[in-house]
Image (cartoon, rainbow, N blue to C red; front, top):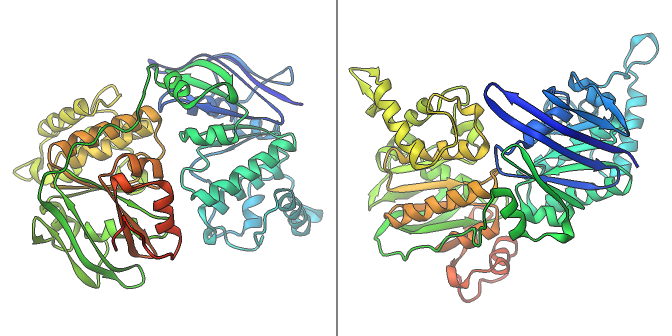
Length: 502
């Protein structure tokens, strides 16, 4: 079998040492997981393998031969393919066109594209993966899961011997994740070497043969997966024991802050009612398409409603985001990069955006006041960055999420809506977010949390409201909630049993 190695890799960016003598190897026919906190060096290591970054010192070796990867095309030509978390696809082009959009050998006689040849190659790869997707379908019409599979198929059309998958299931449902894992195992059995990067530790034990842990730019160690347990893996990642990812929640004693009454948005939400008290975390559970994020957007005034009411402290909330903000509502969106942050701007300016009306002097942006505000939450949230002038795009995912949260906490809200608050961040950052949520509800803040990770919903909620098809299917008290009970409400039409109320 083939073997791909990184030997004593060092990489600096200015004064930052991103990689400090990292060695790593993957064999053909194995899945080798790479884990670590955000900022541990995983992304830099991937980019060295992908030909995006040249190491300052060290070597990339394949089957005993040192590779000189000066450009991504060099890596591709040697059979190394990278599937990034944010897919690089062309939504208006067909599946077939996306498969071969960067291929070099697509032309036949007279310089014309040989579509018949490409179609045969596309079908062969799909048969190998047991995929049933129409090659003529525009990629923009596919699901996120299908888009991931198209990226894998594209790698195979280039005869990839090693495939690097960066958080491949971050946006997938449980069912789609199972399909992806089945294909990963099939590729492994076909002799492909796979480097699998994920913050979801349960996936590592599900699909990987070996695991290597990075911490602070160094390799902590490599182990056969069967020789480690989650507790040991977490300790290796964060450098300390973490006995419980979910802190104990304080008791709820406050009055009702949020009340949603019979909220309806035709075709999206149907007669949704719920309430949240001060000092309470209410988890919204459900499968993709259940209406959880749509409900959050309606409460915050982004999307219109056709019927119903949203009240904060008994008063109707104006139906605009600014009106909701003035009423004391804060909303941390699901996609921090798309609509949560302005990545090229500094931490200071991102922190200031929701509070601009409070940070002006005679109509002019008060930079010293914004710096003071940003520094306060920079320190409170323990953001790992040189300072508040750092661009947000240069931060790790966990630190970006802290900025998303901090900018809203600066407004001192009554209600905080968190949509997927720990998606795509490492276990240490998750623990910090969970700790902060617990402290905030202890101070009387009402929190609505949307999460696709059932252990997080169960561990961080006083009550769980389960949605399906735009309706509330039931409610579970913390002591009655189990994964089975939540899924029974989220995925079936069975009558609601004791412990749940419609």
